[in-house]
Image (cartoon, rainbow, N blue to C red; front, side, top):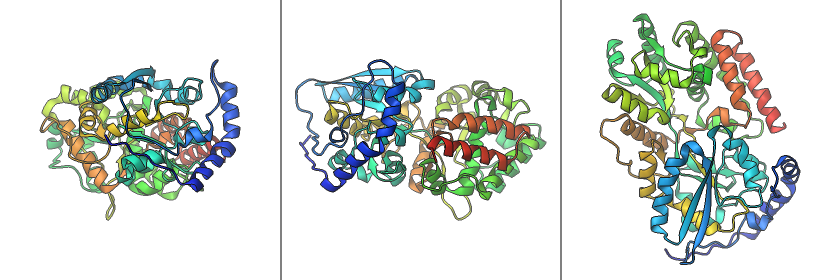
Length: 454
């Protein structure tokens, strides 16, 4: 690869320094106070925003550490092996935390005296504002990352006020989840479904037909928050990708507590009252719900590509997948979060090699590895090879449609670190009739503002 040096604009660098030193100071003090033994402070702004970068890794041995959640280890190891084969002088060692604590542990890991060189980040605006991540703009210039779809780039950017979606780039994902409706083809035929519903009215008609036929319309294990999947699908439909992403990305004045959102939640409550969810949904977890859908108990199963491999194995040709219907005159939109949203910690001493790994994630080889692991690949290009007619192939095609529509929406539960519990518990109360859509949205917005300190 040809050596490529990039010098960053001095005025923008000065603004970055002001942000890292001024805005992040109070947050860094709080982080240091609760950090484990050995944790250090954030690096200087000059380390967080390099002015010169190189795409030439040379021949000298380079050792990197990659940090991620344990559930993503197999995918990461395949990517690491492929990258090391291209760059024999680079060795990458994986370090993994349990999935349920990785996001909480990440800020402490990033602030430690010996941070990893590549790290998965979920609460991006928090750690970027604390000066814990490398500003990747110089690498983006060197590698041409600005050519990526705008809907993906928005998930990697944070501005000087901590608002995601714009500003400097801090991450690059290896791939994405994508959500939609799995459906049982045999049951679909029984209710007269000849193809994926094109409107919300068509979808609701099929739900009514299934309930009348004694078939559970929507399988959901709401003990672990699965009603939130169809809930956000309706929020996406009502509010649109741009509006909902603004809320998740912490845009000034953004609120989820709107009449349109309340109408979407009213529909969910109506569906629960009509018997469209299992009667025991609040006592059923995601694993049990998956098994019950695979066994033929329900027409639809709103979920993501993480369930594709199991459903392929258990249902074979009897399972299909489609994106939620687009609003009339609007674009397709559905939840599509990064699988591993990788950053380069500011304290890394091998940033050029780490950036080369991030760039590798856009390659056709890496895209195929990610698709084989069940995720939708980063970047854009030919749809990776999948078994023709399989549900995985349908998901890859659906993701290509979603990228074309620029309709990737972040999960609302991930807007702040503490919102998942609020959303899920409120969704349980909603289907039980223990709260109203308006009260649910008020509780969520209050938690959101508290978490952001607004």
